[in-house]
Amino acid sequence: MTLYPKLITDALASVRYPGSGKDIIAAEMLEDDLRIDGMKVSFSLIFDKQTDPFLKSVVKAAEAAIHTYVDKAVEVTINVKTRQTARPEVGKLLPEVKNIIAVSSGKGGVGKSTVAANLAVALAAQGYEVGLLDTDIFGPSVPKMFCMEHERIFAEEVGGRQLLIPALKYGVKILSIGFFVNPNQATLWRGGMASNTLKQLIADTKWGSLDYLILDTPPGTSDIHLTLLQTLAITGAVIVSTPQQVALADARKGIDMYRNEQVGVPLLGMVENMAWFTPAELPDNRYYIFGKAGVQSLCEELGVPLLAQIPLVQSICESGDEGEPAALRADTVTGQAFRHLAQRVVEATERRNAELPKTEIVNVKKQ
Image 1: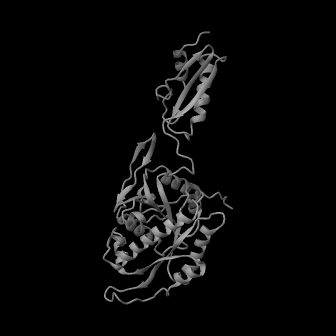
Image 2 (image 1 turned 45 degrees about the vertical axis):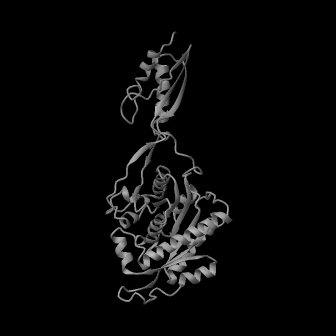
Image 3 (image 1 turned 60 degrees about the horizontal axis):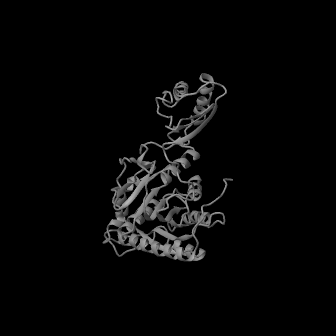
């Protein structure tokens, strides 16, 4: 029997791709590399991505079609190609990002997202290239803080991959799951789905060259933190807490998570948020409504640097609600405090990079 190309393509036209209902010839899935050598046939099938759920079944169906409609004696070799370039493997993600800073807290309600957002803005104001990734999949707050709740994110093809383009505001590249979900509805996802979504936000985004990528992490310790530690080599962590004892008790757990021997992420320091209350009409007065210098005492006990003390003033809440972070205003007490924090973070990061080796991606198993 003599084989010829149309005999093969006619057989392959009987195979349908379940994703579109079209046959694989009409769907242009056959690469232009069909080769025939006696009773040997080789060709490539093109799929959109390597994780295509129908890939294996279509390849088997293509081989079976040639054996059925051509000859059982044909030796078939099928190569698989993808239109989209594979995602870089873990360990090679974000090669143009110099420093990755995780902003964390032991419990919710201590102003961690406020600190992360203002830190990012303050760093950008000092001339650094900055990105801010909201990793709180279940309770994203960054869109609200930047008045971007209706922001729409688009993708573009870069090097054979479809990459998300972060939003840009106040000189900061911003990305949050909040850009993709209804802000008025709860995100009811299992841990695995949330972790996979986070990996997409990290790896399938065009972050470009950054001096600092700030991670606004969820409160406490969770699967999300584990995913971050197993996906990115985090340069250092900043722990946010208020002065009261209940917050400090949870802050200890956050510190322990990063200091754990299985993790080993350096602590750049702590931020005491809501350190004191200063009323607008009495700008020189300080009222320690949550306790005095609680974070400072914890830092001294654990040998952790105190990076900044941020006062509680009405303007912080107002600026966050209005989408204009306090760090934009260098002429205010809070604006100065956040810019001071940014400078301290830069100094701590440079010292950490000079004295310690690069952080390794964590290899831990969930218990």
